[in-house]
Amino acid sequence: MAYLDNASTTKPFVEVCDEVYKTLKENYGNPSSLHKLGRNSANEILNSAKVLASEINAKPAEIVFTSGATESINTAIWGTLGKLSKRGKHIITTQIEHSATLNIMHELKLRGYEIEYVIPDENGRISVKEFASRVREDTILASVIMVNNEIGSKIDIKGLCEAFKAKSKCGFFHVDAVQALCKISIDVKELNVDLMSFSAHKIHGPKGVGALYVKEKSNIKPLIYGGGQQSDLRSGTENLAGIVGFKKAIEINQKTYNKQHMIMLCEYLEMLLERYFADDGYVFNGESDTKAIINFAINGVKSEVALRVLESHEVYVSSGSACNKTKLSHVLIAMGIKPEIVDSSIRVSFCMDNTKEDIDMLIRGLTDCVSMFKK
Ligand code: PLP
Image (cartoon, rainbow, N blue to C red):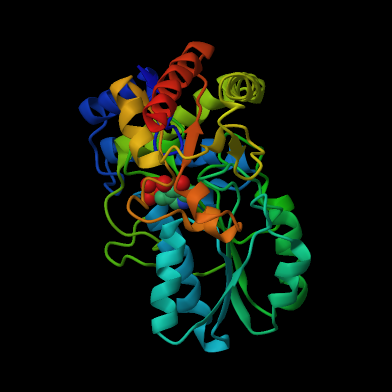
């Protein structure tokens, strides 16, 4: 089997599974309970916050654990509006956001907010100049993806945030860093952002757990009200086993993740595509900066069919975001790629477990696809 769909989700590390199991079995105290069992659980949460905080140069008190990045993004956006909506109705985002962000923006438009979507260049990056030209004094929020989940392009968050803060009087800058965490270095203080969203299952952690960085004194409003856990920002008894599993995943990534491995896999894939499909014609979509995600199309090979043929070879890839199953990729369309190429696009996403043999299997499957389409 060749699992090459790591941008959709990753296989949890064995150590993560062990830690989750151990926590469920042994550490069942409610983190809000005042007795020893409760204090043990609360300590585990604090230790997990310390590990994530150290990865992004934040303080542990600035970390809020959530049910995943979708909740983090919702908390960041609705929470900002809860605090700032009286100051303005203008919001900036980009056309290459994940649907978690875009679908909130659609709803906000219906509720009377003015949303501006910055267009990417042909490589999938956002120009600081273009972005800066849209920021106004009354812009209350910017929400921008850090590494795109379909093509792996890295956005200049520092440049965008600088431009934003230079003009906006009081606005918050939120970053969707789901595909960036543990792949590129993140320093929230240097970036000067206010909010940042993360998800555990993209880094070999458990599903259903994520986090939101909330800069000290931001005072955003909570999305979920209740018992006042996590400094009132996210009520509800914490998913302790998930949080501890998230912590373990970060620790292992810190020790094992190596971009050179991704570069090696990418170069090998590029070499084989050139060797086997140069005559058929193929193109790369966008420019991957992390090299963990790579997107390409072989002329005339529809991705919907290719995915099924590849599956019969036990090769798992995707045609874009797992959350956007039925539509043509809005990211590739926004980059100005022709619809027939978008319809043939395949996203391959790597993790440290992938080997050249996985890519050999992918190429064998693709060769099969091409000969099918030629018949
Ligand atoms: N943002 C990006 C860039 C993603 O890739 C994903 C997951 O596909 C999400 C947000 C949503 O994350 P979650 O599945 O944790 O809700």
